[in-house]
Length: 414
Image (cartoon, rainbow, N blue to C red; front, side, top):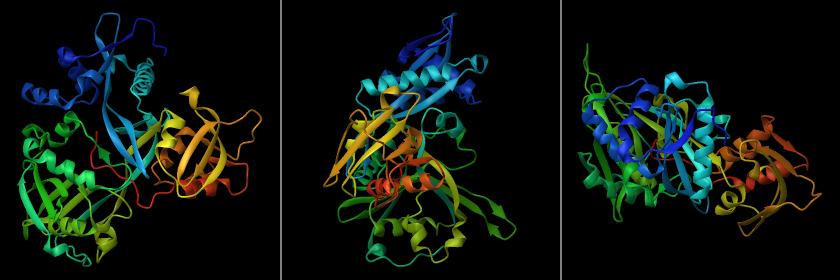
């Protein structure tokens, strides 16, 4: 990787935590009291924190990552969740971000992590490095008293409310996501990433209450959770409070219906907003008035394949096939070229195509990465003019093979 003259990559261990936090606060236009910074220290995996120093040994840019296991169709894959990416405003436009991304890719591959993920502050930045939108999402705002079609046994499920607490409730969250079969689900989440989900400094609540948690239990234990907050307000006709959650999961349709029906009917609220839903989320399919949910499209998780054969062989496929896929990747040259994807009984073998082999389909790494979890389809990228089809029908064959039964989503942001 190439950095501008006078800059060098360095580790940022815990002993340099204040320098790292200072750069990120400059980059994201925020400042925290020391009490908040102390809590942030526990939300990073310090052996993954890296920075770029200038010629004065000052930290000019920083990044980190979370290591976790991600559910993919028919299996799991080791993933590296890129986070805390920031460049000091006095050091911008010098190629430091490119140096950090190259460093992140190299270190992730060295740890045996064939894919990288992120939730983006500015999506345009990361697409040029090959990240594709693997988990498109919806935000819904349920009006008070929104109703849902019945699901057997849903009303019998136990509901528990509590103050959200990392020590007492991390195991609940882990239990629910372990049962969640959707691609994109984050398994084996680190203590640092879990701590980030429960972080709740008072100075950042913006008038909301402290974080609470709602848990739905069935005969197997925790089946759904939502970490949420409310903000009380009063209008001319009475209470006009709002509630919201972006950290939630439901392992069964019955638990999902119970979760949303209760959150839609909390006292003193006029609406409840939920982020990171999929188009096939039960809340949407069960709603008696889907228009009343005020659905809005958003992006959530962006994914980048770092090691083509390792990533493609980690998941299963819905059809047998034998295709030569030509991949364009200008950032990681080892991925570029023609690859033979052979699938038998759902299991793939991926090898470099033999010399002279003709490509059946051509695709860029960004679009292949977006389709990796089975949500956005190869067909959709083909119809948008982003996939080159050489053999008639090859794009649709690959698309059908990679499709997931359920749309992918992730419970957390990072």
